[in-house]
Image 1 (spheres, rainbow, N blue to C red):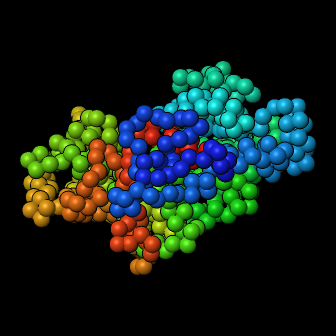
Image 2 (cartoon, rainbow, N blue to C red):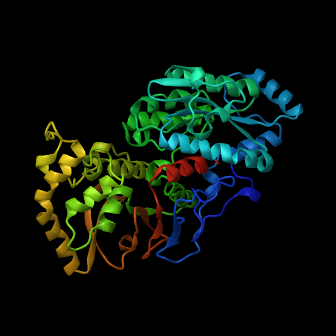
Length: 451
């Protein structure tokens, strides 16, 4: 988002380098193996990563004394920007953070660590102007980004959360300095998504891993996209599907280059990837779910993961990116939650929900074991997959069987993987694979999308 990357600073995406999380102004989180972008296991594919960056364009604009900032302030903002640059100061990206949990704090850490490099190599200053939790927020004065170091909370600046006021504060700070405004939504809530349209129309860029806007009501989605065009701002949502794994950018690159996407299929849940990568013959399914829960891979209510709704949201986002006008309810989901343990089920009063659910799940181990054995006899594996079929205009989420030499059978730990079957990439699809979950990976995905 800091702009279209200057040629000398543009990281290439190939078989060994991620276009999302691999390089972000010197930030290289140590979160495991780098994602791979390849054609059916063969290297040589590159993505037009420049198209997903906004920060470097801002840097280039600053060097040319052009201000592509918020529309608010008009000529006054331009005069301030010219005066500021003439005085030798750097163009500034003013950031407002909505959501200050694990991902939000990790993103701040990455931004603060990269700040010296951004100033030196790109000529851009990044300043965190506001931060919000669910009930409280802090509107920060200029030059106080370091007060957030180490996940600290600026209690002296605390006031009741008001996201409209937060957005105005960030836009005003950008107008005053002649810089640009960016709102980062790190939540999983609909409330911030309701404000994207207004923020974008006012000239603030929006970056998010929140899937609510991209998979919510289609009418709202269209308004958000239109507001981005109207405000000359950018809606950055790469992290909504693959977290730190580049999925949206390769898809956009294929479409812009003139390729015709026939289908997209992938494992889009790190939790379910971990479960099915860990589940082997002789191991009870409920034990694997318990292990995932105990290791912090599942939500407090494991049904949120096993139900498949999160995967359906990601599939909806991809379908819309291709041009299908799907609503979330149009995507059928084959849930892994037994019907008797669905929404109406309640745990005993004396037990925690997650523990009680796993205990009840044991009654279905034989049923799940039969599915696993059938796949084993056919030399196949089980994988929980989301798919978009462009020709039929449909999408789906379900448990599928794949040969052991299929790319989906090679996933490890909590890998995400996505296969693009297109007019050009056939009979072997373009495959993107790598870590797709965790606070560090998600924050890196958001930050490199901003880059």
